[in-house]
Length: 155
Image (cartoon, rainbow, N blue to C red):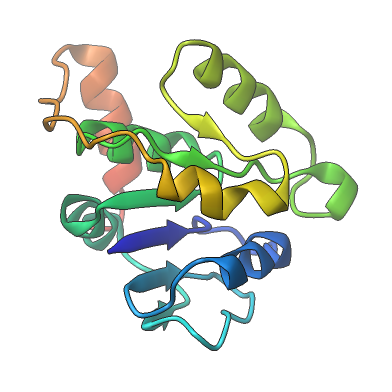
């Protein structure tokens, strides 16, 4: 299964939804936010709780996402190297280009596979690296605070 998520923003991410036309739909699960999902997907939902997102990461063979920190951390912890399509200001998908900067930094460390060109997504997913083992959450006060902030109102 390929799991795609746009995060929990009020901004539409039509550009990512259009990229999905090149992926096989029979095993494509999409959390689409306020955008209209492609008609060929096997399942589409507007919103998922953080716990439901984690369950989809665990079940997925590949993850395609926006460049949200919580999403990326969840995918990496489940053993994925996520394919990341950063939301861009020039397309009115976000207020600034912080997702582009985060994607560049994480790609430089091999933590994510950036998708800069819409035409590349299908080939990148077909050549996906094997999923690694799940990573146990780090411990410490900073990690606990981050987990708590991600789970506020979602328990």
